[in-house]
Image (spheres, rainbow, N blue to C red):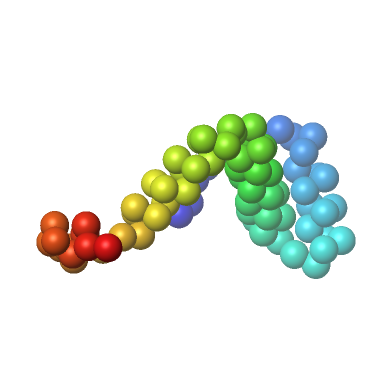
Length: 80
């Protein structure tokens, strides 16, 4: 996906320098920086969550992985 964004004129030479040092493109350096930032923010949010919130999130993720097409009858569900 292509998006046009405005970048501060002072940052462009720094991006070009980083890209040259890494033997990469400016686009790749920007993509890597954005990916790192997103991962960093996700970790910050996880660390700020309470134990109950983490458990709720884990349950939500498990529920999203569940196959909704499979039906379990009541007898099988409550069988011990």
